[in-house]
Image 1 (cartoon, helix red, strand yellow):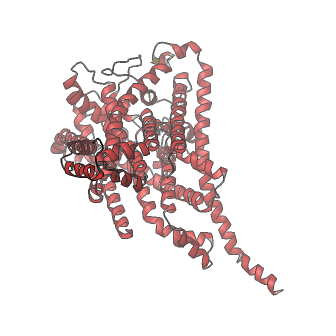
Image 2 (cartoon, one colour):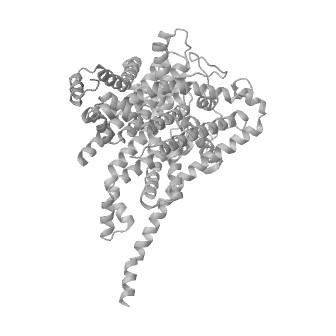
Image 3 (cartoon, one colour):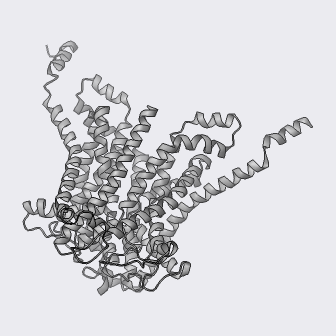
Length: 305
Length: 317
């Protein structure tokens, strides 16, 4: 009898338990919403993209150039343009981002780190539309035209450099995290063998953090492909395939932005409107794939110490 | 004798110390790559200020309070500032409670099983989705749903209202909000939770009275950074119905409900984009001036956040 009542006491006040369940349910619903959102994204993209694919002729996907209002949907052109800008962006972001990460993780003393790190944080806080204006109104006229007078007012080079600047903080912070996770013992062993600081940084720490650095670069590529405003302002509206970095062209994100700006009545039901979802689905698949790969890289090649 | 003794090697290496130009060069190169970002920031700011100066010199603060216009001399950004503030308010009201709750569930309640890991991976992936894809979602779900009668909609606006924009931005920042909150919760020590359970508190009592107060500075820092990101976001609003045209007017007798669900809206970053697209060179100055206002609002928030974080870290350290 006594043992029984003690057990009942242990289960606690029913009101308290009911409240526990309610709170738990509320929190669980909130977490469920995030899953619903990703499902909604995928489903709305796939549904509309499918309608697009069904509605158009296959030839239209191979037509010359991307002119949705004229029924020419050569996706390859957008992809090539996106790749060119991403390539230029990575040429900027990888050296500067990686260099910043090495300096912050291996060279900077705690005090100077506290002063220098916010530079990257402030840069990361600059909206992309501002960098788009910077690329269009400063990089092109004041930098690129000084070197290449023949450059168009909208060109891949300016857009690529703008996107690259935007991605420096991402590459820097992810690879710095990876380098700081390299155990101290490795550095001390290196110094103990008589290696200099640069040798320890570049030949010991960087190789040990390589999986994290690779992940940073892949994430950077994914971000560069998805970057919209710099490209929409600085890369131009040319729908014909162009491989010259001094001229411009529509990218995947640029095409979406342009379709939504081109007319205010974008909510029609024609193929031009639905092509927006098709490009969006391609963009989503591409960036998702890259993000998953970067996670795999970290998991598979991480050295465990 | 071919072999040299250890002491000789050590001595030689010690003597060479202090004149390793390789070391200095490489350290310098790394420092330069970091300072490159600073140079970009300084050039960007200086260039924008120089371009914006004529506007502020000739018009002063009238530029900030004037309405949109296709006339260069009278175009202002008041609607953009109001729109951005309203959108930020909506994001705080929608994404902050939802994000914190989801993070609390995932960190404190959920067991470490396949479902939880899947949801976590899902959220990480959502954080990497390009923002313009969220715009497509916003266009499809919110603009179309609202269009189909969730709210009364005036002719010609077609559900492109503040609610659609606010929901789109909220969905965009939700994963980032969850991730930063989860990090803040993870930093709370296990012992604190166990001590609370030990004196008989339930899970919710422990979270409310112990975990959340300790994690609060971290949660708030993450939230402010996330919301400032939403403030500068342009691409999703292009699709989620913000007005891009040269001017529009909000009827002066619109009530609050009417204002968020039935009136056109725009935001400061969109005005920047729209000004920047104009072919007339006079608009370059206007764009720069609008950028300065945008950056001023953003940088003050970011600076406050960094100060706040330093203070919290020092108190803990």
